[in-house]
Image (cartoon, rainbow, N blue to C red):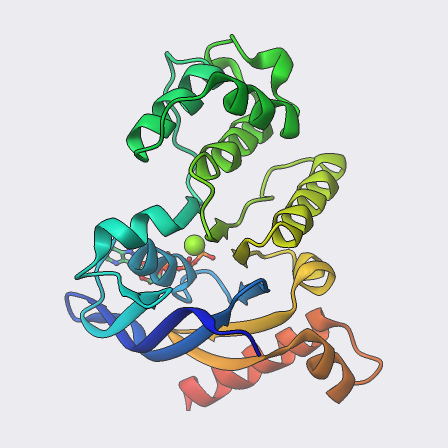
Length: 247
Ligand SMILES: Nc1ncnc2c1ncn2[C@@H]1O[C@H](COP(=O)(O)OP(=O)(O)OP(=O)(O)O)[C@@H](O)[C@H]1O
Ligand SMILES: [Mg+2]
């Protein structure tokens, strides 16, 4: 197996008295697509925020390509890209300007032809010069993906990238994810569309109330539960865990 790109060791995250992540350890390997699944509030975004520097774990350590996300945060932030779950955008900038600005923010030389090629990839060329606020929800989300890629991150986090994206574009986004992986990017995605994980992921992690219930390759998971869909397997695990927690 290739070396880990991401290594989380005993990560705990507390918000006041509430524990959002409990002693979580996880490795993600170079070139894989890792799907992080779990119900609302499981801690998926919290984990992604701790890795990408938007939050800081209370305990434990996180390394990206061997660099510590707290002590070497400047380095790790350049190595990771994040497509956030919440759509944030610059209402008065155009998609082209947004990408150019993002390049500056990420410390890479603003490059117009690179920005234009990203817009093309995400089917936004004809909105290049429109105010971002006039874009549809799905278009804004695609712009977020393009923004996350301006600095060619080695490890890309997609936090529910396809919510609100139409069926056709969702498939195109899947293709884009596969192309990125083929080009050497490691990808961690969260999704509530279990079929998305079933289609894309090499490995699957299921998070529940801040704890990983399972980390396994999709292949072996489906093989172990022959004849059942990932969604059925997922639901059974979550229900069992809910029973255990309720007890
Ligand atoms: N800044 C914060 N302050 C207090 N509690 C928070 C904060 N951020 C997240 N939480 C809590 O941590 C828990 C995990 O939230 P998180 O956003 O990580 O869940 P999630 O798995 O991403 O859920 P979803 O599928 O709905 O996006 C939730 O109970 C949430 O309310
Ligand atoms: Mg979330």
